[in-house]
Length: 116
Image (cartoon, rainbow, N blue to C red; front, side, top):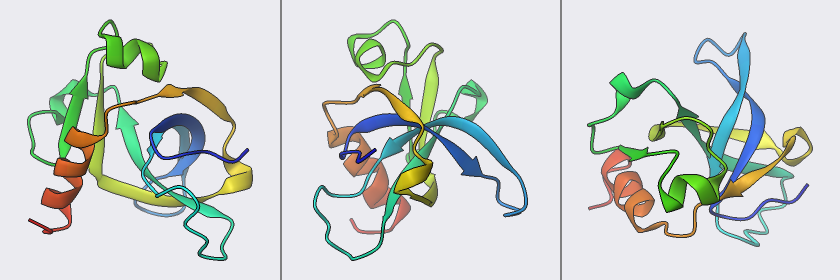
């Protein structure tokens, strides 16, 4: 499945030990048609652990908000732009939904990557 920037998809996301992984939703960050020659996509972890919210690199999305509903989130969630991974395109299980407004995500990424 070829995903687009802003898609919320389900993947096997690697833990930081790189030995284990957990199936979870992620937000596709990579620009559309990057044409990098690699069949992979850059994503941000989505967590339902609300203790992780409140950091400038993270965006809270309520599941019952218009954005949460459109993204297909079943639980209140935190998009973590400080927890990124590159996943093979073939490892994307399916599309949950889409986050249409990426402005807050872009601001969080700028903070994470010190691009301000």
